[in-house]
Length: 470
Ligand SMILES: Nc1ncnc2c1ncn2[C@@H]1O[C@H](COP(=O)(O)OP(=O)(O)O)[C@@H](O)[C@H]1O
Ligand SMILES: N[C@@H](CC(=O)OP(=O)(O)O)C(=O)O
Image 1: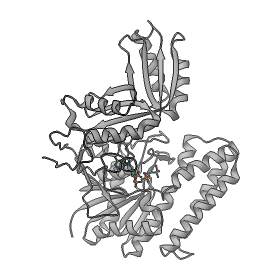
Image 2: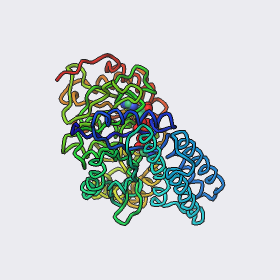
Image 3: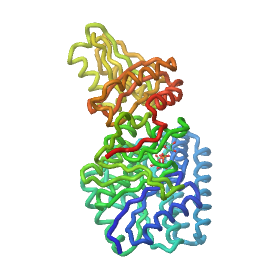
Image 4: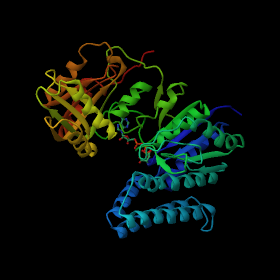
């Protein structure tokens, strides 16, 4: 028996139907057969999270018929998968799925009666996606001869703060996860944990932010001192750009934790922005692997970056649906208390700032925020800052970023970026470079983001094979 312990995460695409679930189970099973202990962490079946969010909104707006139709469709989808994975109609799995849909229906009816969808009730509803997919994965593993047991995030020990929709693990999580999972592993059982979700100390269900199953997996990896965390995906690994936008995007062999965080923060949907944070202290590696090509090494994410001379940039990413909020008022903004009131107002609303820039005359500050946060930002600023300041919004913006540790101390990187954008006649609205020099980001018109991404990808030769040095 080896002493190796792996945490394996399967995303929505790898859970989308019974065939995908069976294939994912076989990927975990390959390691279990070799004597490796594996904890499996699953996302909801593809599209289910969005479906749950939509039906919660429908219930809030009074359209209970639409919400119930969507629940019925979800029920059919999960029952079909269970049946195809061999569950008998009177089996415990089918009973579990039926009960969960009933609880979901009741929760949604409560939203409809109250016409109120709080972040807390939204989390309760949306976490059903992962609660429903875990039993299916356990079924598939059992069907392939592996002993398995499914648990919700809370049952697996993931305890979070009360930040519904974007919760963070509490420090006690790690010991709890160890307590809850070690016994199962020692008994030769493969735990299947519902990703994306945790619970508060009082037992309310929370979620960890979109794409949060990656985060669940690394939290569990840290708790158990795993040898590695593997995130199985529908792509070869972390690529030099979103492969849906750039056809010649290439797999990146090695990335540092810092580089991956920048990439995820600046829109590379491939990993949750906080996913590597639990691994940073212990140095546990994260591998992003292709479920379609399991022997391909994918991307190794580790503490040290590896750079190739002449290749300062590793990837180009973009955040879409951004708005720029401009705050102006000659002679007012230079006063430190006024600047403080701007940031206070933003902090009170817990709004994530994507970029900040200030004109040197101090008469203008620009903030880039997700368009979904723009109205809240505007109201917070209008209520919280001096009336002499003018606050306005520019919509339909995108933020494009280049990322790579090799740009540290390198001259000419921004010149290449700006030349590539200028060659496509792309106007730059804001510029920022992090002091870590791991990224340079620019705000541009939203409808130019794809051509900008392709131009920048080509300008830095990211489609060319790179021999990574040590
Ligand atoms: N730089 C990138 N590298 C890899 N994939 C990316 C990148 N940027 C965006 N993506 C997109 O992320 C998707 C994979 O992430 P996601 O769908 O969240 O995975 P999963 O749900 O399987 O965990 C890919 O289909 C790809 O289109
Ligand atoms: N289902 C959740 C969590 C998640 O991580 O999903 P995926 O692994 O499919 O990106 C979401 O859609 O946000």
